[in-house]
Amino acid sequence: MAPLVLVLAACSGNGPQSALEPGGPIAKDIDGLWDLVFWLATAVMIFVTILYVWAIWRYRERAGDESEPKQAHGNTAIEVGGVVFSVVLLAIISVPTVRGLLDVRAIPEGPDVLQIQVTGHQWWWEFEYVDETAPDGRTLITANELHIPEDTRVNLTMTSADVIHSFWVPTINGKRDVVPGRSSNLTLIADDPTPPGEPIPGQCAEFCGLAHADMRIKLHVHTADSFAAWVEEQLAPSPLPAEGTAAAAGWDTFNAVCTTCHQVTLEDVEGEVVTYGPDRLITGGDVEFRSSFGPNLTHLFSRTTFGSGTFPLDVAHLTQWVDNPQALKPMDPDRNDLASGRVLGMPDLGLDPVEIAQVVALLETWK
Image 1: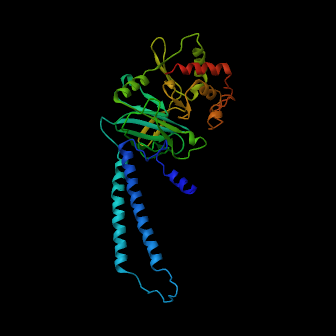
Image 2: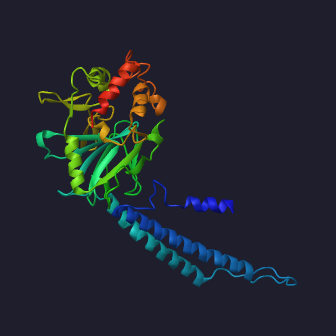
Image 3: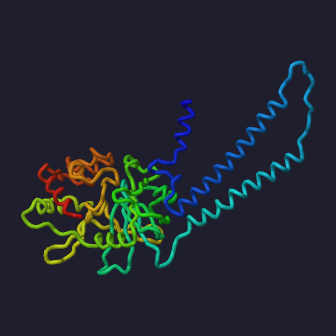
């Protein structure tokens, strides 16, 4: 009984990352194809099992019967019937499979398509919203938590900054590899908005190093109005902190240390907008991606999680992360241990508890 329970539990489709509970038309097509193959395979298994059991019973050895069974070489009707049945069965499966593959691989086009460039990093996701009509050339860049409007075709153009990753939000679409030096595309269409604070979970589905399991995705689906409001909030720069505050002291530390890896776009008291931090060019196929070494933190506290969707965004976790991210999420100790001063191989950058508290106070102002 216990083995049967385990087998049935493995078939459950109510997990947090299940392709068996589709939330969009593409995922529904994939789920429908899975259902078709499953039920056809089940019917064939039942038929073959019944035929096998019948043959064993019909031609079993009987007491007192020592006659030799009739020897026959093949049966034309059975052989032809088996071939025809197999061809028809494969056609039933292959036609929707090929059609589904073409539909899933198609790159959506048109003015109503939301274009997002995705860069996979060890071990986080970078999202840049492409909008040539954005005022003042402003660019919306965020990380790990992807926001899209409902009932909208979203084209993800993806590449990797380091190793092969795989983007996968199973309730919306299948997985797609993200390869350095190449660009790949994935279409997302979500049926309904997600409740506040309850994003759709996703995951990197290609082993990419020590923290692969913690390279997660949170997909927020908005109404059209809610998405437009979110975009405007994200396009606005965060303010530089007022002089004489803990956040101002944190900015001095942040600008000296954290901008080694992270970008942030800020507006000073005179209204000047400046982006701090590294900027590098990543080429993926015919697409050029602007990227940084760490997530853009301009609106960090507008997110619900950090550490690539791994930890709740609160002061306690963030303090521990700034102190020593390696203690929370094993990654690359030679690049990610501020406590010992190891950041991208740069020495003598360790932060004391006061500096850590000031940096966290600064980050809390970026909403």
